[in-house]
Length: 230
Image (cartoon, rainbow, N blue to C red; front, side):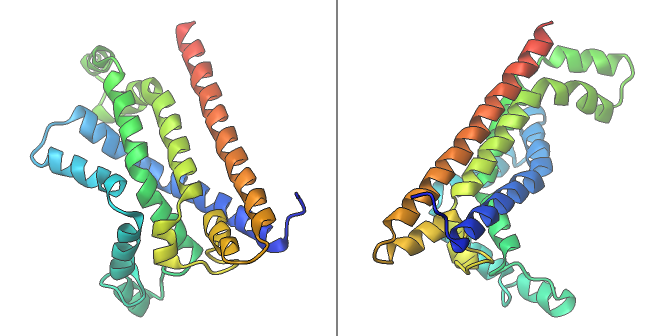
């Protein structure tokens, strides 16, 4: 039952790499966007908010197709990058990370935004009154207060990336050893007679990794709250 094949182990390792890169690479943008939506008023804020959350309501295949049209090797942007710099992400693991990051970005931003909104603005105002620059207020006051939400947002993005299927298979396909993640490997095993054992193995691994990530996030949040209460 738990005798993993080489292809399954490769898919598991690739999924972990894709999910980790997707979460970490999008985290700075998630923090900046969450702070912008939580603390600033500007023209077009509602439009930005809608665009950020658009991947949640669009079919993942549509997101993957848009990425393929824009960033594919013959796409509007991807063609230029490939022709002039030899850089391409379509049908590569980096493209899977990008597609996963796009799909998980709304969950990350929403969690971080709510955490920043719940932070006491009076502490930020007090720091500013004492002469702290906006960047120092953000770094020394806002970030520590919103830290639990930032961790939770990163974990949600990681979990979403780990299970992403529609956008990634459309944008990068399911190339064994290059872009075949746990989800696409399970889909491939569905087409093979006698693939039930492999499906169960990969599904249990996916559940286990996601559960461990969520438990670790909860532990970190509780620890941070305990330190703040002292």
